Amino acid sequence: MTEIRLRFPPSPTGYLHIGGARTALYNWLYARKMGGKLILRIEDTDTERSSEALAQGIIDGLEWLGIDYDEGPYYQTEFAADHRAAAAKLLASGHAYKCFCTKEELEAKRERALAAKLPLGYDRTCRYLTAEEVAAKEAAGLPSVIRFKVPERQGMLGYDDVVLGRIEADYKEIDDFVIVRSDGSPLYLLCNVADDIRDRISHVVRGQDHMTNTLKQVLLYEALEAPLPVFAHIPLTLDNKKAKISKRSHGEVVSVQFYQEMGFLPWAFNNYLVLLGWSPGNDQEFFSRDELIQAFSLERINKSSAVFNYTKGDAKFFTDPKAIAINEHYLRVMPVEELAPLVEERLRAADIWDAAWATEKRDWFLRVIALIRDRFHTLNDFASLGRAYFAEDYVIEEKPLKKNVLPYPDLKTWLPELADRLAALAPFTAENAEETARRMADELGQKPGVLINAMRTAVTGQLAGPSMFDVLLAIGQDKVVSRLRRIDHLFAV
Ligand code: GLU
Image 1 (cartoon, rainbow, N blue to C red):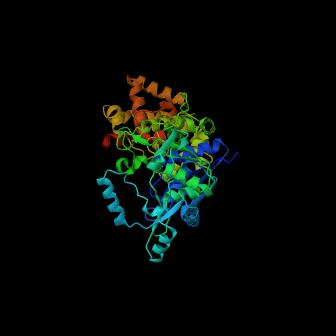
Image 2 (cartoon, rainbow, N blue to C red):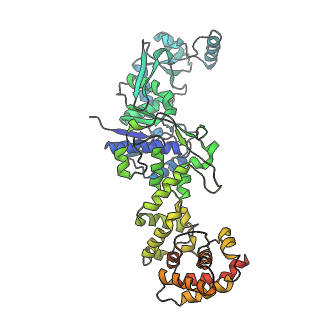
């Protein structure tokens, strides 16, 4: 059996976006499932639009996603000799010819064809030049391009697409396409095939937007006497208004980096991406890495376009709600030990990291993560919504302040009194803290909720959260006491 070899060949003319990442993921999954190889090839031949920084961004994005490759990164520009050799081979074997028609001549031919309602493709004038005529034009120094000689065959040219089935066109519909420009540079269409042949690619899994090239490329494989790879064209990703997604119309929300910055878990994002255009054939929604590698197949890639259900919600946070839901799921179920370094990274970035949390206070750190993660959407929430657990400069939100503090001016004396009672507790446990608060509410003739809700506002700044007494324990006796004593500040804002 021939080796299974796939490739991800991004053009570094833009950042890594959802569509590209999904293509990379599908190639990776299939390579891993089949025990094959994945090759990363940066297709940087469009030197004007490509940049090293963009290539690096794509490499970094793949690394964040955990999409590893076995060969590369190769850079297409390093293989110019292969591209020229492929063109020379086609010319020498009679599968291509030099075309001397000028731009003006081509334009005039086109206009005549338009007027006569004839096909608009190149009329193949130069295809039938004799060797002497070609030699004479060359001797005269006339510039030329190289065109591929589409076989004059009856019947249909085609290939079997794993996703879409048989794809065909009449040979007559294929134009004698240019493969080398007049400056001698081979066109992308040819470079791409020459590279895939050299890299012994067995499966080409790419977006449907490349299908315009595929039939021509099938001809190139045949003419270059190389075996045809298996083709699988993935449907495009559209937004919920059926528009193609792009940075111009959708902004950063389509770039992978956005999800990294927002604090998505890389595996959760892969899990979201894989379902954007593929289904397991049952209702399983969450997959471990190994499960997904096993479950994945090219045959189950959807034929119709995928929907990136983009909703512009509150300005701070918007994307496909499905992406958020999947991320939340992993935040809840991931082993806390695996989550800890990712939370650490966010706390460091927010400048509220304490080295002790990775050493002598590690148990405490893990307990806090387990306690607070249930309400969070992304890793960034640990530094924002969860800030009170890690720092003193947490925000007192307006809603709980208005609801649970301001209507009760007596809290100015009640909370410091409660602080004194909590300070006296030894040991300080969830149970005796709760008992203390309830007893004091009772003595004051107040509902326990009045003290408990005010306490939550003062200690965490939030309206809701985990059980208040677990929260007190997590934040710690000293900090709780000092935050309750600062109650006057809350009335001052
Ligand atoms: N370089 C192309 C792109 O970035 C990929 C072409 C291919 O997969 O054949 O879209």
